[in-house]
Image 1 (cartoon, rainbow, N blue to C red):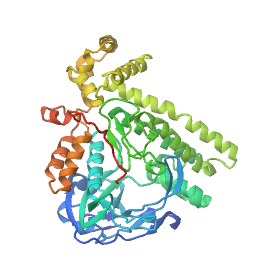
Image 2: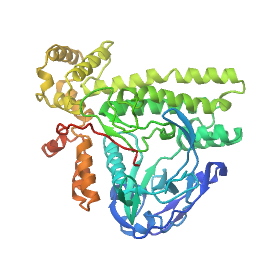
Image 3: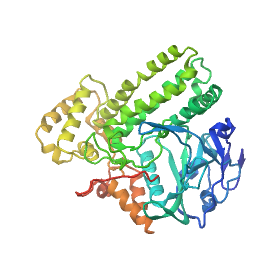
Image 4: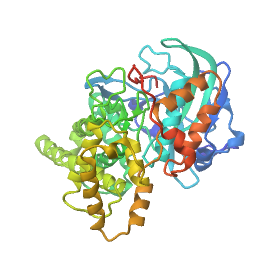
Length: 480
C-alpha cells in the first residue's frame, strides 16, 4: 500500500485474482478535464484530501500512486438473454483502504474504451453522469445501500449519442463491483478453480464471518439472498424503480448499482415502468421482487459446482436456499411498512392493513411518497376524502392503540421511516437540463435538500410536489 499527498492508499486485491477476471487497462486521456462537482464529505470518509484532488486524476489523465487500472470481466442476463459483457466504459483505479480500515473500490465511469467495449466509444455524457451522482447520493441519504459518487469531471470533448453531448467522467465508489454476472462469467468461461477463487474472494471481502465454515459456499448464497431481499424491500418502500435489473446489475455486496433508466414513482401503481426499452414491463415496480428472485436463481446456478460434489445434492441445497427469498423479502417489506405506519409490534392482520392502504392508493391514483408524508404529519390529501379511506383509518388507529408505545413514539417512528422528499423525476430533469447548459446551481440546491430527506422542514415543501400533468409519459433511457 502507498499513500501520497492526496490521501490515496491503494491495495489492489482484485488484481491478484486469476487474470481471466480482468484486463489491465489505462484510461484514455481527455482534452481538457474540469471538475464540476466533488463530494467533500465522502472524500473525507475515504481519507482523501479535497484540496489536493486534481481533475486530471479523476479524468484518467494521471494515475494515482499505487493504482492498478483494470477493466473487469463479467457476463449477465440482459432482459432474460445471456451475454458476455464486462466493463465497456469503466476502469477500476484501485481499492482505497480508508482510515477506518474499509476496502473501497474507486472506479472511473466513461474513461475510454476497454477490451469489453463491444464497439462502443467507452465514453459518457455529462447529463447521465450527473444523474447517477444525484440519485446515488439521494439513495445513500435515504438509508439504502448503494454505490456512491465522489466526483464528476467534464472532458472538454463532445460525444455522439442521439445528439452531441458534453463528455464527462464519474468517479464511482463501491464496497466492490462483484456482481452476479461476475460469477456467471466464471461458471461459463472459467474452470472450477477460477470459480472457487472468486467465491473465496467474495467471502473474504463481504462475508468474512463464514470464511472458515465447511459449507461456506452455501452460506455465501444465503448471505447474498438475504442482502438482496432486504435491499429490494427498501427500494419498494420509497417507490424506487431500478429500471434495468439485469444480473450484471446485482451486486454480491447488496448495494444498488448502475443508475441508468432508474426513476422514482409518483402515483402509486405496481405496473409503473419508466425505461424506454422495457416495453413488456419486465422490470416494473411490482415485478422487482420477482426479478430479484430470478436473478438469484442464476447466481445459485453459477455456484452449483461449489455447493456439493454431487450435482443432485448441489441442486437441492440451492433450491433450499432460494426458497427462503420470498419470506425474507416479505418480512423485510412488511416490517418496513409497519414502521412507515408507526407500528412497533407484530400482528397477523398487519399485512392486510398494509395491502388495503396500497389498494386504496392505487385505486385513487394517490402519490406514494406524499400519502405517507401526510399520514405522518396529519395533513389532508385527496385520498383521505375518498370512500373507503375513513374505514381504513379507523382500523389503523385501532391497531396503533393496541401497542404499548405512545402516540408520540409512533409519530417519531413515522418521521424516521417516511422521507418527506425523494428525487422527483421532474426536479432531477430540471437540474440536469440546467447543468448541461452550464448552470450547476439548480443541481446544487437539489442535492442540498436531498441530503436530509427525513427532516420534514418547510424548506422542503417545493420539492415535495409531483410533476405537473403532461400529455407525454415520463421516460428514462439507458444513458449511464
